[in-house]
Length: 285
Image (spheres, rainbow, N blue to C red):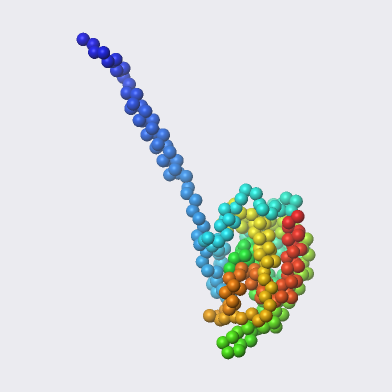
């Protein structure tokens, strides 16, 4: 005798089993997709840059320091300081490893070959320029990748007991470089910069700033140097190892760019700031 329950259809699984199977399939696809999606990892912390004369072999561009300028690492969709007029290179640019020749040829329109060789490291110049600019607002510039050559001569100091003081005669060591910087036409310099900007931008992104804008960093470095304090009176130094350091911890904590402005002396710093303002005026319109 038939019961009051409806008969189960023959030949198919129950409805609840179909629902469970569908959930399992969707969940499996979700987990599989997550397994295939790469997880971004932050750039490694940079080791301490080598001091002058240190290190050997092929220098490598340092990674961004952990916790420093992470806003630049994150970047933004739009640059804070767009290129003037939206200018870009009109012709195809060489690969970085083949760019030294074209860059040198362009720079010869600004200064003679002998002057460029005296003050600049022209080998692998694009990468050196990017690394140097990026580290000016930081604590140190990696010596092996500095775009500028070391200033000849020894640091001029006066020692009286345990006190070591930087002497004004030391500022004269930078006179030739400051004169070289003043001799460069700001408008022509920016024209060369804009011509090779896509190459510089590519180098900057390869350093660990995939969403950053190198022109923003250039303006930031200029502004940082323009904000360097004017130190009056004797500058005390200490020599914990080989190299001198500022005895005043506030001076020692300054960025590499600001330390340069102090090291060249007040008169040379004023001349360099005039050059920097002229370049900034060409970049930010």
